[in-house]
Length: 399
Ligand SMILES: *Cc1c(COP(=O)(O)O)cnc(C)c1O
Image 1: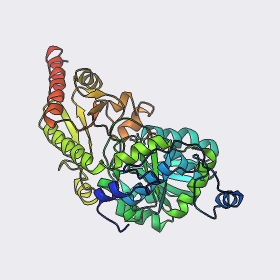
Image 2 (image 1 turned 90 degrees about the vertical axis):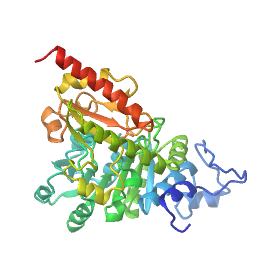
Image 3 (image 1 turned 135 degrees about the vertical axis):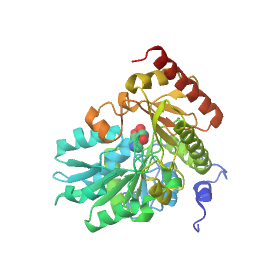
């Protein structure tokens, strides 16, 4: 199929119909596939012909989803995994060996830190953290044994960015494998591979599903690297369930319209929060007050669905704010049709030390909002009510 617009690719890139002439792709809930004869079985196992053998290796629903994400990310090849974390661990486990060193941005998803800090060192793989805001310090952190660079942009929840074009050059000059967790942007807002980066990972659980139903992860990028990753996954078994693959493939059909609304609601919410006296600071990539807003506008189609803000009054104000919400969901998930609110310091990033949290911009009063698809006026009204509750408590208990 000749390359069409993003929206069309996300919808029209589907498996050929079966003999049943279905319009929407069916779910292939089968653990294995039958061989026509002994010679075909031999050829399939020898990788001489393409085809499904066993669902841990491949399945039509997973293949369809992977083909779709590859078209959307501009990738040569990809793989579907059981969760965003299994996608990240599979990349690192497949490509790194004992003695290797990783350069990672300090602002990473909490479980990514746990893999780098607690799990990979068991196999002699070490990590140095660098700051997204100061790329001039990265070169000094590279060692002869550095093999891979891992970043998130925009980061969760500080919404810092790295210049993807600069990063591609930095990694190319030093022959480092580059991996971008593209979960917050989705391929609709930014496509790291088109700058020459090697691999992207996704938590499909977030905006790709978009409705808080299923856990899954995706990998897309350079064919030679995906080949090593596929070997690792085939034998270690982090494969995605075909049912979840079907859910994500259907979800991708609506990604563009959903992201337009997520981003529109998030931007309007961010602008409104900036006018509020209870709020110390609002962080959103497309706000003029964001130190990297020019870069955000260069490499992202829109600013994303997540807004972070610092409420005056620190941890107590943050907790009171969350307890005063009536409609918004207080939950650790994001990228849902329902607007969600999280307090990273006490939940998703609680395993980091206070110093590490502050280094990635997670102050005690930081609140992360993932703007959903409800009407913006109702989202704002609920936050307005919760901010008023915080305000009243300040007035009643001046400290
Ligand atoms: C949620 C998330 C992950 C982990 O994904 P799971 O599907 O929960 O395993 C990784 N990276 C980012 C940026 C995330 O938000």
